[in-house]
Figure (tube, rainbow, N blue to C red):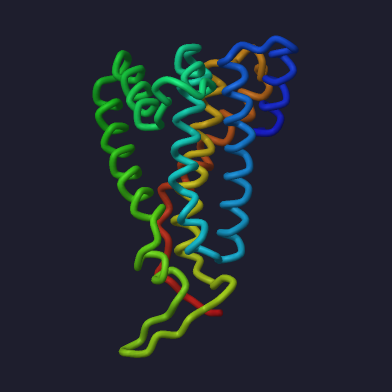
Length: 211
C-alpha cells in the first residue's frame, strides 16, 4: 500500500510537481525503505540494529504529515537554505490539528509522542540498551550473540512501534491525498485498523533467547 500510494502521488504530480508533492514523494520513498529494512532486521532478530531505526521512522512519519498537508513546510524541507523543518515541529502540528477536534485525544497523543520520542532518542545512540538486545548475562558471565537472536517478545515490542508509525504515515495520505490514492486504497487501509490495534495492545511474553 505504501509503494502503491507513492506511485500514484508521483504520477498525479506530473512534470511540474508542487514542493509539497516533491517532499511527500521523497519522504515516502525513504519511509518505505526504512520500514522494510527495519522489519527485515526484526525478523532476523538483529534487534540492536533495528532499534536504531525507530527514531528516523518516527521522524519520517511526522514529516510526511507536515509536508503533505502544508506547502510552506514542504518548502522548508526542500530548500537548502533557511530554517530547516524538524520532526518535532511537525509532531506539534499534528497534535494542534487534533486539538481543534478533540482536546483529550490531543493530550493523550502529546504524551504518547513525548514518551516515544524519548525512548527512540535513547535507542538512536549506542549505549547499554543495544548490548542488552544481543547478549545473555547470567551471573558474571556474558555470552555474546552475533547475527541475530530468537526473542519473540522483543520482536513483538519493536514491530508494534514500527507498524504504528507506518500506519500513521499512511493515514496522512488518507487525510491529504485522498483523491489521489482513491477510495479503494482508503478502504483497504481502514480494514487494517482492527488488526493493528489488536497487535499493538498485545502483551509480549517473557524473552526466550537462543542463538
